[in-house]
Image (cartoon, rainbow, N blue to C red; front, side, top):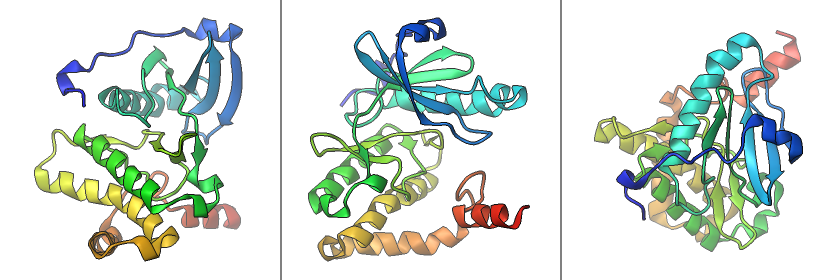
Length: 234
């Protein structure tokens, strides 16, 4: 595994003007405070392109810059870990890009394909991420977890991630446990018969702690509460 000292920001592989000669497809348009995400094919290479330039002036110059900068730093820390987006770079003030990670979201595949072997590999991948001083913080859902074409796991979308290098050990361990609970949730839901007692105990302990976990969902709102607000027209 690469040492922290070996990390070097990737040189820009393309500029915004180069996009005119690329093939582009929309992956996610996002909400008002999220980037527009596209898959870009340029010079035989595929990239994920995250762009805030179409958002309001206030969003793209405050939240947008903050989120892009945080994700870019996280991805550069993770450079070299298979299953994460590599070669990340800043396109301009309002966009970043990284290598596209091919695969299928766990939210869209047959759960029977998610084997105990896959879950064990996903656990190891997340440990490797933690070993670089990064917590993902959005692993409870299945949308950011992938099954790659060779069956290996992948993790994408580090917009909500945090660096733990400055944190006291107790806080770092807590955040890593919260992160890992996303993997154990899949284990408990999809392969309960293969979940050993140690993993189950960790999962149940983290679930007890989650009632005190403040940053849940989008800007602190759970998906259920957001749906309720939309339904009530508020």
